[in-house]
Image 1 (cartoon, rainbow, N blue to C red):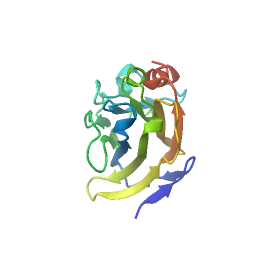
Image 2: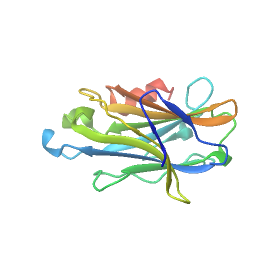
Image 3: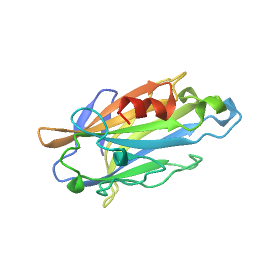
Image 4: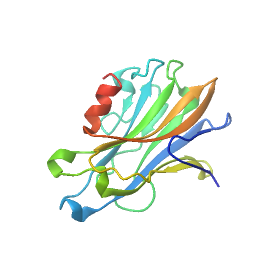
Length: 187
């Protein structure tokens, strides 16, 4: 059984865990806007200054892998249908560039303004880390927040402290969609 985090909580990954998957999932209330939802997971590989190392270190549906192959998006799920993880990002710490101090994982609603959608219409959102070789869940954070106007949510942050990697549950919502994070992280 993995660790269940609450907002603001963090947990170490353990030195032996080098390859893992960050799975993110959600359910939507289709009837709220009359249109389908397309939520998108993204990862921003950040340096010590809190900015993206380079534009190639912004991992999303149009750039599925970092140049080193240490962060790989498994693909865009356009509907979110089905059980379990809706989108996943693989991480291999053994290939991580030395100047990467953290990776922030976000989920945004594609075309949210035009479709009149927000995270208030999303439920059962979560982020989890699991070992793909055993399918053992290492940790999970259920976002129990009620986001009424937000179109983007920072789910969590993987960060390096004293040479060890830890994960922090964030759960911070923003208006402005993906563009908000592009600006925040310096692209």
